[in-house]
Length: 352
Ligand code: TXA
Ligand code: MG
Image (tube, rainbow, N blue to C red; front, side, top):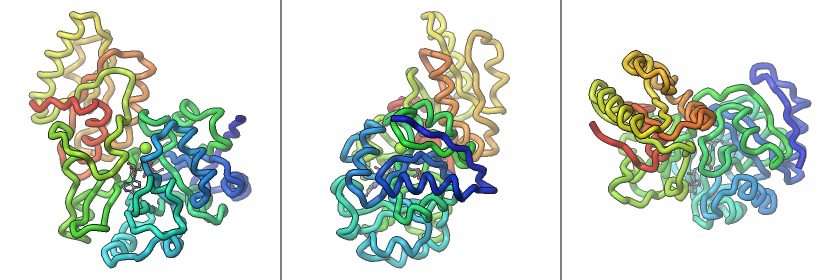
C-alpha cells in the first residue's frame, strides 16, 4: 500500500488537506493523526471492516479494545446506554483532553471495538487536527496508538513512519505531540470509580471532581501477579529492543545502584544505556562508552513524560543491550510514567 504523508500546522490548519484524510476514513481506510497525547491510527469507528484493518496493521490482539474519539460530547449519545452523572462531571472538566471514559455500550458499537466487553471507551482529544478530522469524517474515529503492537507509542510522525509506512493510507504530520503519554482510562461503570490506565489526567486531578477515585492496583504493581481490568494492560508494551531495569526510591541510592550495575554489565562486555534526569546526569560522566540520556528535570514531570517514549526508541537505534533507568516518584504524572516504565521493563523494577 502507498502511504501518503501530509504536513499540517496545528495552529493554522489547512482544511482541504484534512478533508483528504477524512475522505479516506469515510471510505474505510486508515489515517494516522496527531493528538495531544500520542499519535493515533484512525479508522471509521462503527465500521467493522475498517476497524479490522487497524488490528491487522498494528498486529494487535483481537481482545484488546479500541477507544472511540469524538469531536463533541454530544456525539456520544448514540454510542452509550446512559451517561452517569459522574461521567458528565468528568466530561465537563476534562474534555477535550487526555481522559478516556468507559460507558455501557449501545448496540450501535460493534463488538470488534470493545473486544466483546459491554463497555465502550470514549474520549474527545484536545488537538485541532484530530478534532477537525473527526468533524469532517462525520463519524467517531476508532484509534489506538499508531505503533506496532508492543512498541513505544509514537510521539512524532517520524515514529509512525518507522512503524506503519506502507501499512496505512495516510499519515498526518502535525509535529511532536504535547503530553507524550496516552490518556487516562477511567471506569465509571462500577461502584468505585477506577483508573484502569494512568495517563495525562492524574489521580489527584480526578479526585478534585470525584474524591473516591481509585487506581487499579494491578497497573502499578506487576509483582503481585494481579490481573489488570483493562485488557491492554496485560500485554507486553512500550518495549525497547534492549533489556531494561528500572530503579525506584531515593535518588542517591538509585545513582549508586545504577553505577554498580553499569560496572557489572560492562565487565561482561555489554553495551549499556542509562536513562537519567538533568539533576543526576553528571554522576554518570565517568563512563564515556555508555549512552546516557536525560529525560529532563525531576522538577518537571511533564518534560519527563514528553521524552520517555522517544528516548526508548532512541536506544533501539543505539543498539544497546541493557538500559538502566532511574525511576520517578509515584505522584501526579509520575504514576503514569512509572506504569510505562514498568511495562517497558516487563516489571523489572528494583526498589533501592
Ligand atoms: O491517548 C490515547 O488514549 C491514545 C490516543 C491515540 O487517543 N490512544 C490509545 O489507544 O492509547 P490504545 O488502543 O493504544 O490504548 C487503549 C487502552 C488499552 O489499554 C485498552 O485495553 C483500553 O484502553 N480499553 C479500551 N476499551 C476498553 C474497555 N472497554 N474496557 C477496558 N479497557 C479498555
Ligand atoms: Mg497503545
